[in-house]
Image 1 (cartoon, rainbow, N blue to C red):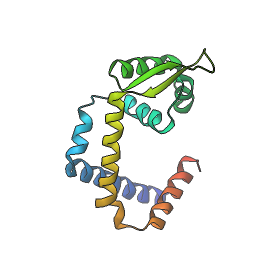
Image 2 (cartoon, rainbow, N blue to C red):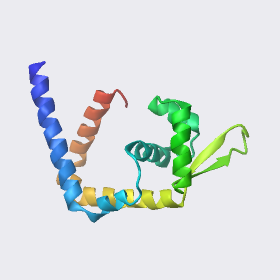
Image 3 (cartoon, helix red, strand yellow):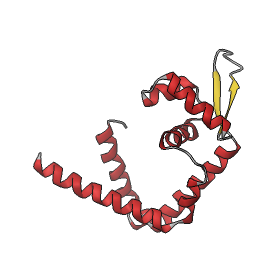
Length: 144
């Protein structure tokens, strides 16, 4: 147990150093602040971007939060033009959630940040090493 705690502390320190590097490195990260998203809104936007279109139940199930909490976040994101809702033409009881105009801007900025991170940092290691990191993180969180 003690050895795990030592290694975990070192991993956490490296994550903190990396986060500081990124925050200091780019104006693009500062641009993210212009969207005025809460951490919860940001995480839900990441989910919608990766899985569009989604329904509120998908979000609630994925994050294990109440439909009421999802509804509040979705309403706020819609008000901010980050997303829009549309009745599912196949199942009229469902409302599909799509990325809105502001959400598209947010998505494009995230892509630019990822490209910068690859260029400046991730490209310092091989794809095999990155895949090993991904495999390790997948084992830790219990996904494939």
